[in-house]
Length: 439
Image (cartoon, rainbow, N blue to C red; front, side, top):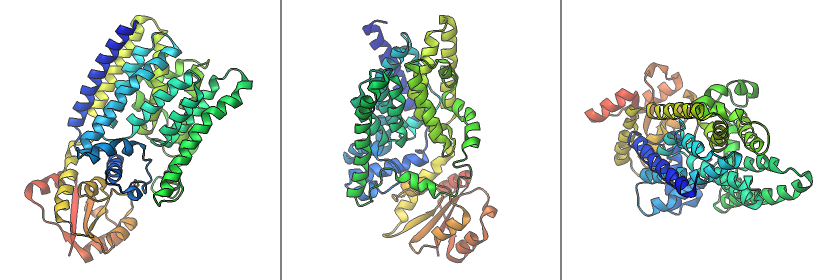
């Protein structure tokens, strides 16, 4: 394909992608649960509150990209969608080049598979960090395939600031070194800038008063008791295929047929390493999206060596599946009640008041920090509700009888149901949200 035709194709793909994400954003009633944490961090950075912004367990890379928009006074949700869309579009060129490096003719199907993947558009619309991460991974993969080791290390280190598994790109790409005598020098040139980026993040947290810890989310997850399957390696490995196919569809199958020869083996190793990391935690389809660059590049390389008609048929099936999954998935429309309730409670809060419960988006819409990213049992909720500063309790449950006795006792002793306007009460009832106010 000529340079002019390549640019024209990328232009059309980019335009269609921007429209697709905008449509999904318009249909998304609220950001994702982790998404509101990123948005809150961005707001703290924009306001100069670095201690608060860096005091969460989430990496700061994506919120730092959003902070200028918030500082300028723009709507943070719109800004998140705009930044994520830009990241997806900017990733197309290095992804195209990486796929072409694997096999001539693979660039176009790689770009199409990438933008039509089942989850990527939704994650961009729901303020998740995956689009920003995949941009850095696409750039890092491109540089790694060219064996530009310093650039690879820098990009992998920057990717760590968005998602910790970004540094895994370095050992995977070192499989490209055919001459074992060159391996130590290549490893040093790639690992040194990646390590500096990791240390820089730890130093930034220390300077903000949060301690020298480049990976606080690891310690947070180690203390979690709400994920029974966490760290069950064999069970998690057996559970991989379903969520993997949900994340990638046809591309999730085709990538494994690319072969183990160089340079494909470096991208396959990148996938295997990231799957291994997921298996040490819990298996969720969203976590696999981080493998998107390597997966679609390898899948496209497989398509490029197939007969044209068969490849076109598979690509069409992949696109249709991805678009249908993106359209039918996403956040339920009735969760708009969380936005409406949070905005109402924001007008009722007094200085020092807080909200307890299990709906993190309500807290953020009310102007308070989002909840830690975990599930709370009734005993933990009862302890949260008992705090003196708690004025409102918001519980997202459809069956009040499921509340434990201690939580029920605390609510009965200190709280009453909060009267709401008819429209808001109806919206909360449809979603199963119950609201209490301190007596």
